[in-house]
Length: 68
Image (cartoon, rainbow, N blue to C red; front, side, top):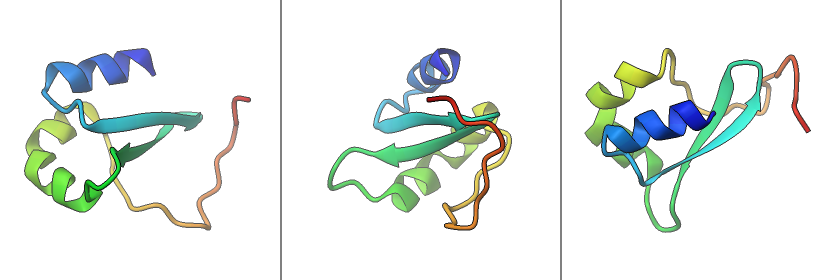
């Protein structure tokens, strides 16, 4: 996860918060008051250099292996 965070900082995306969920999944969020869809739209090209797939959070999302 540190590697992902470092790559995001190198690409100028320091406003994203990255939280590890388990397996190969992370949860992206933004600082308070910042709308994530707006930030993603403005950084889509740089974001997809780093992240393989991006989809909105869904309560039905199942994570195989959690790290506590």
